[in-house]
Image (cartoon, rainbow, N blue to C red; front, side, top):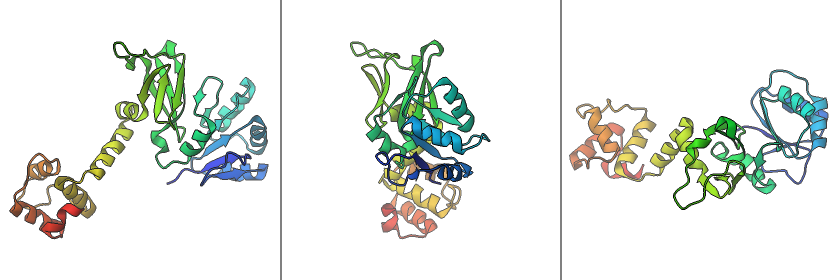
Length: 256
């Protein structure tokens, strides 16, 4: 289900599919929604409208504020939202890049903000859906002769695709692949979906048909698995047998 994005009273920062919140009534209605949403606050005036409109309940939404907030206001926002990201200690993407990442279909795999906590060996990264990922700073190793990671100069760049520690850079998808099992599964799924080999076509069609590898009669499940992984080239008779089990012509099998 697509996560709603609300922009607090700022025409300049409006983005496709986002909803503009102009009044206290708008804020109350949006905040009352039970599903998780992202709130985008460009200035402190918009936060004032929000604070007056909603009551403290069970926090489920996430807030991204572009201006620093006071300690007192941060306490209130932490009571109202499950996640609060603001620039007191966090480095964010530029505004124009934020606008695109927050509504991107793959925003869960892009980063919009980051800050380092060296004393705890932690780099805290926030994705486009404002969920966090904590990565050990010790995981960053500069190559010999190359730039060294500098946790005092953390930033995100390239529309959330790059994390920088000074001049040291690492791709966001590389971090997600190593430290987030869900992102790793999504990456593998994309790789399989893009594979145009016969084995990948058989796998896609088998899953579409709701079949297990054990559903191919005299062909062993290990054989089906090896064919799908491209480890063996099946004979024409085997291809015909698999195609029949999947309900297609043998010459059509590779088109799926």
